[in-house]
Length: 98
Image 1 (cartoon, rainbow, N blue to C red):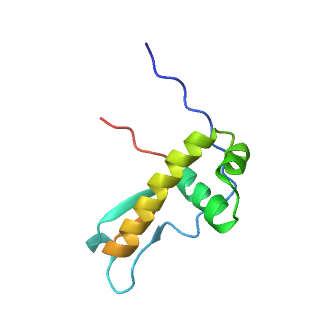
Image 2: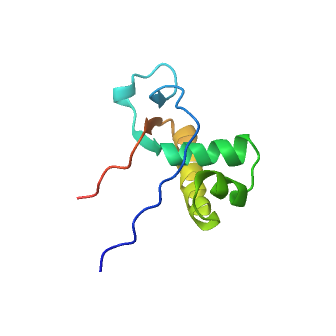
């Protein structure tokens, strides 16, 4: 039995660069956390634009449950980077697991 195909997640926002990091430390010296396009888009829509998870799901073409899962992961990654001094690396796609 093959897994259900992943729905396309519509993302309007653009990355402001390729990474966000603390100043004064070179990127290669920092632990790096990937923040994927869909995670940044959910943060933008829910936390910056003030949309509900249901409204965000409609905009992105996925369920509210998917948005809830994505935003939980995105907030955890962002909090970890900010509190531990890690770099957030903006990535278009998730890497395939071996």
